[in-house]
Image (cartoon, rainbow over all chains, first blue to last red; front, side, top):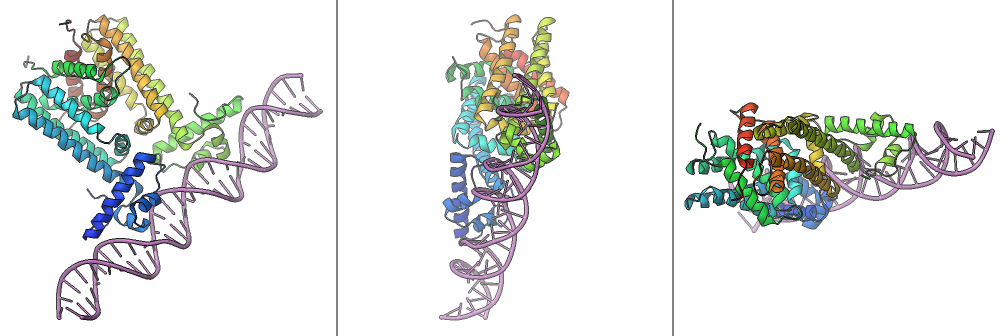
Length: 205
Length: 205
DNA sequence: ACCATGATGTGAGCAATGCTCAGATTCCGG
DNA sequence: CCGGAATCTGAGCATTGCTCACATCATGGT
């Protein structure tokens, strides 16, 4: 929400903000968060350090703004994938596969900066809330799909939330960096098999 | 492994290192990583700043040392829980429940500092490896248990790894901070139900 | 066309931080 | 008791995040 302080009203200031964000993303990617100085960001952006602090309250604020952008794009991509599944009335295994692939795509989008953004999100209370809200949105979409295929057991909402969290972690930890002796494809198959069983239609009793 | 630079040989220097680590843990807990200065750590530890830098190469190194300690204890706790299950020949649902509860206990052990440690681990390549090694160790123990109860499907090793990663994320995201309208107990039940289905014995075909 | 007001841009410099280093102090084997 | 190694010390250097007093630019009313 309120990242920064003054919000840009004229065209040239919006350009300035865009330059700053682009420069920050580049430098964070190249040298990491700590090794990036605000003065260098301003320098690469071609603006003075004072301008930077007119639109961002903090060094953290820079990363927070990038994180919000990233989270928004991720949510859209995953929700689009789910919407496509709904349109073609895909069965459960296809649903799980699409979800995992969409998550993998989102995480691959900018591998150099993704871990930084997640890190930062974890120790900024406002961004933790944002991350949970994002999970909630995706889980809600998934829950609707689970009901369509009669999956998720007695509590599709909770099942969907657990699935979103679990699949996300597995994509990070195993799909993108497969363990030695396994290919990404094998991991994906195992993942789909497991979640199909976990979310499979289960009668109330 | 080689956290720091010189390694303490005499008794008094081991005491110094212990004081420094204790002070660092306290200050990180109280004020976070960025707001904690190395000089304050030395001051609270009752040693000079020079002594601190004799045993820790970096400010990061302090947190890395704490993270290693934390990871080691976590691994031990979870492995103990699995060993107990093995001794009493517990069935699958009990296995999953024990795993989730052990993970929850480990994460609750020092809530003030746990997220910081995880954060830090995520952008230090050596600690990322440590974290993956830890996951691997726990997954190996779990895989053995899965074979005992004939669970895990055609590839118990991969299934165990995915389960460890998934359960860990769910404990963080849903069990310790249940979503509105759900209790921790309900979440645990759903979690156990899902993983019991996911890991349930499945014939080769 | 003009100017007044607010939006935007500038960069030297301050306060604070991570970390070094030259030397003082303490410990231990012989 | 002594020589060298281990340990400890803390003033200070280099660097960083960030502020502030001021310059410049854009816009809308007359």
